[in-house]
Image (cartoon, rainbow, N blue to C red):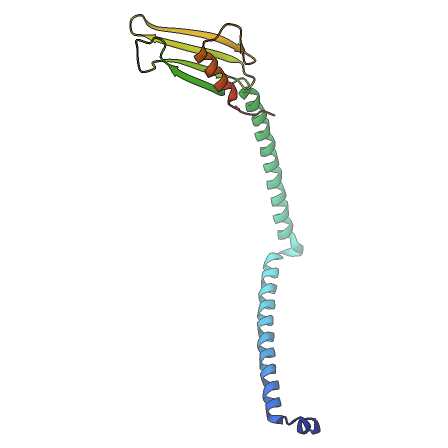
Length: 171
């Protein structure tokens, strides 16, 4: 009591303060007990069964599902390798130039179409339209990005356009 008298503290305020702290601690204790009870319920539900047999079954089911997924992934990878092998020979680079082959005809009805594989092999398809004589179509072979015959300006432009395309990169 001397301590309280020395500092001028009323003992009633100390008792009220301690009672408030005890009430707060009691509320925190109740909250902790409720959370613990909920955790115990979840744990019992998770471990339900004899000696964890249900848990073991659940784990084994997940492992078998993973095995099935791994087999599926291997199958998909095989299919992708097959597709990549086929894709290397598919035409995937395109160049197109429209032009007026004969000056008397307007509208640029003639065109050059170049189709190349990833390795720049393919052909040039040249269609020259004339109002008097009809339409002339020519093809020229392309090997490794090069033609073995002389190309017109439009054909060279379409070939350069097609070779500039990236195509599909196959590993």
